[in-house]
Length: 458
Image (cartoon, rainbow, N blue to C red):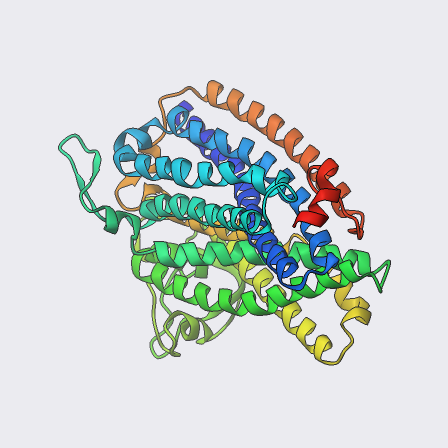
């Protein structure tokens, strides 16, 4: 019993830490590319508005990176403390990927971060823009290696099992570019852009509700909606392709996402379950509301296609279905809401009513966290749907945990929760404080004393 509690606490601690970190890391990816776009527009147009927006969001970027680095370090130590079983069995594969993330991505970002935040006005404009581009590229490298490691745990490839049970790499290309990695990488990067788009649009909308004619508020609102109308359809396509990959490589996860316990009757396709309460004991759905055949349309691209069902597998091979089922619906629902907001923005833009559509501005304020909530829901689908495995089909989670007592894990969990909550509360307070005011014509950057020089030298 003590081992089961220790496992549950270790899983809870890792879920808690990664839940915080993934939002901050994704926001860094989105903001880095947004800053790159703003600086490119400043260098091209030489309009003060673009420089003011760059300085405004650079401060938010600096705050996000500072908090994100702290939350990321804790996860690295967790592998050696709570998950020594996973580290000893899969370290030969995962270790080099994590090392490359630190060596190539983290140091690449950190090396040029100072130039980006404090170098405007001190270095040549093209040098500063190059540094901004490198930081944005570094954020993608970071996502590349982290998602390569995670994707290998989801769809392992390019390895052999040694005599002592360790996973040994035999083909690094296959291990890194494993079957699910391309779709997971693309899906995650676009999700980061969508989360950033919602926050940028919401910031502009919040200020437009108070000052309709402010150019910076208009530009933020407009840019955020453009990002939504472009990225949301791309994400829908990527989600469909990622779903096909899950269907082929992780059929139990897909069955949990769909709440499919038993195959449909002969001659019928898989239904689209709008609502259900999956019951793990009875191995069926309670209070199910479904549309016949529609599920097959997006799962198999026809009206009669079938998928694997949960009752084909023993209970010990199943994830916790209610979490996977509802997390998937939260992700899809918010994704569709973001797509609808982007389309609505395009319609009112074409009608030349964008700055006066106060209903849309209120909607975007409500959707401010939608992208990041959808991302967390998608991460729950990915990680909870993989259970009971850490390395899918090869290493069970119960065999991956460290032989640490439940009391010690509980103590570290409580400390982690306390530190993270304090850190997050402080970071959120500063974030809201920064976003509560509009950019000014003479906006100061992350280093106020060089603000005047920045305007002349950039």
